[in-house]
Image 1 (tube, rainbow, N blue to C red):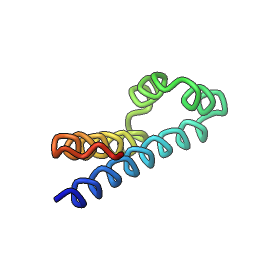
Image 2: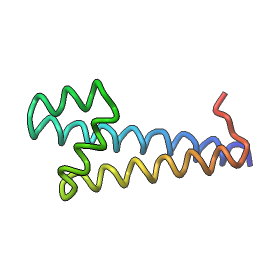
Image 3: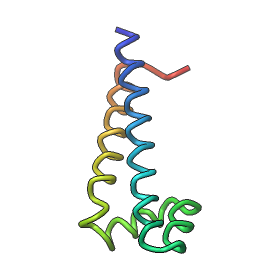
Image 4: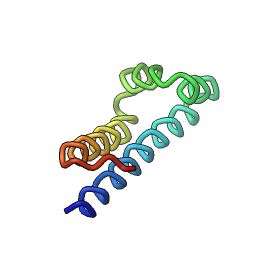
Length: 81
């Protein structure tokens, strides 16, 4: 059971990272300033997602799904160390 939880934890982290990168790439495509600010100040990603919901919602949902998997793995007792 521990290996299943660890796999869920790793998958959650990877999906969360991919979702974050997806939003940063979209912001960078919009403008260099959006990309830099989203990269350096994570809370600005939420502003970008709200302002450009139609294009950023897939990356946001991928982040949420990854975070949910991390929570599930944590509740299973996997700490990743």
